[in-house]
Image 1 (cartoon, rainbow, N blue to C red):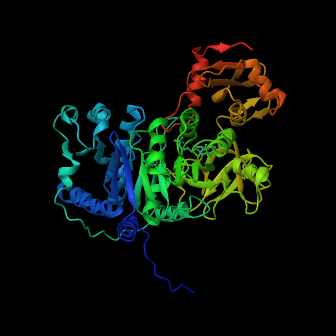
Image 2: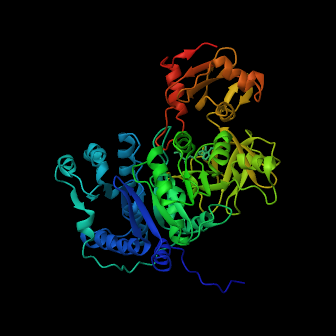
Length: 546
Ligand code: ADP
């Protein structure tokens, strides 16, 4: 028997229409050098219609042509997020921290026709412009001299101003009906090995994912929420927060390019967000700032932290010193990106609840997970059997853009191989020990680099610690600990090793130590372990003897 239900397509334009009308007075607050700039969702909706008219009528964009954005988190980027998919075109968020050759690669690979660029990023775009073969138009957002673009384009690319393009355009657009399985937005991975790989989110996957982001088991968004979205809109769709906010009426605080701890603290104090999302390194910096400069952060109920493992010491410090609860979450660009969120089972408190909070969290119904051993056999969800996590579900990609067949290294029998190693418990909680490529293989045993880092970052003198495996004649690989000390603190390798010995098995303790000024970070703010290994290999790390 077929159901009697309507087959209404799930479309981004529905999120847009709903947010601009039902939640028209919710706001996106963009941080600027002069403080906060406020735009209501009603205005965002009207500007989204104007942008769609400009792209169609003035720039001739039709069908599923790709529109790139080289932008920070701000109101105009939100407008593009909504307008471009709603008109049937495809949004391509460009990671402005990629190496120039990677930026060139992804713009050409996606065949972007238009790039919307924040005027502060004109020099970056001008530098790669001569290599962007399919690009026809650039739209500059904000003031600032566009002459470098004109020079670099050699006159072959039309350069427009956002304000002029949108001026006088109708504030309504007849959004087309779109197959919900068609692409709405593209995102490329940060490509730490080889070229970045692209995934195409569908209208359907974005819609379903947004509902999950809003749910109580994830961010718990509603019209009274105000979300400080630190996670960049050019990385994994800002965790879906822009769309989820339009769906739920949550207001957004957007930091634009002001991502340092001091302006973030000022934003929290003055705009009073109720929750936030960012990678651990941002919160590590913010914590040091808040400890040194007491700031009123009492508005913040929770901050969701993911992108790499969140050190338990960071969670405790925020909870105990600043009254802010860090909620650990895990996801991937390939999965829109939300996977698990670590909310403990009901009724637990104290140490029992904390043990759950340290995990990567519980997988929701729409994200099915399994642990697979090295021989390809599926292992039990018993909290003990360690293997690679594989996932499948309606907002998880089944391949990369342009691949004739799903890459067997990344996909198996309709499951995405995450490259993450860990366990699943019977009640659905995921505990990751490491990325497969970062696990340290020492004398036939595995050492989790993340476990050593977390243990080290619990030492009061340690600001950040990054542990990598390095070649060792006797054991194959051994851990190298690189440590950033807090300002004004000191510690010796022997002291840190003794400190580790309290919680870490003796054979796992690193013999190699280096004190460094900062851990190198990837384009999305994660520890760049590849670079640390290379620094060790080329002898540029000054090792401290133990
Ligand atoms: P990239 O691959 O470009 O770094 P992604 O954000 O897609 O960007 O990376 C996804 C990966 O980040 C995951 O496969 C996992 O290794 C890591 N990750 C994300 N969240 C967590 C977390 N909470 N704990 C441990 N690792 C995480």
